[in-house]
Image (tube, rainbow, N blue to C red; front, side):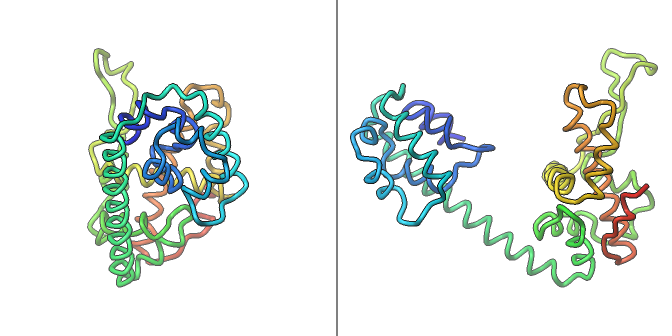
Length: 254
């Protein structure tokens, strides 16, 4: 966040506008921050020289197009003059971010190796939208599936259980909302899985379309229904773990 909100915002705001997606700068952005943060320096280079400076590998046509847009934007950048302290900070932050990413990558590999020792892990991997990491997260959160007596108990793990929002309202006007009192990381991962599965799997996509049918113009309905789908995916995961079965389209046929 400091790289975006402090360094890029002050010295090269166009970099943030053209290249940052979902809060995660890609390798090309980090390379620019390391080697040529100053828009003035970029504007003074030929495009090929700029390209050669930030990457040694072959890039896609779309990436080259975006880099050319950035190179052109540097000529009229609103950024402040880059001083030595700013260059040092940018390089330091990039180094820290890369180290954290390597640590996370290593931890994820260890998680996957450990999860393979459990037969339920393969059951979770069979669910559309469930990759190695979210499968390991769900496996770790649920553990022994037989220890839960009801779906509500499982949903409470991720804070996806419903509770009435009563702030300043009587019971007749209270609206049910998710409690958000469980594992926030698991809840976020399940929503991401819902996003992937609703786009890639025809059975889940059909289920999702039924959820939003007739409510398409309702504000925020897409996210609300993805949260509902995330809850459904967690229940499906628990059920498959309990019976040690693999995913079937019938899980979403009802």
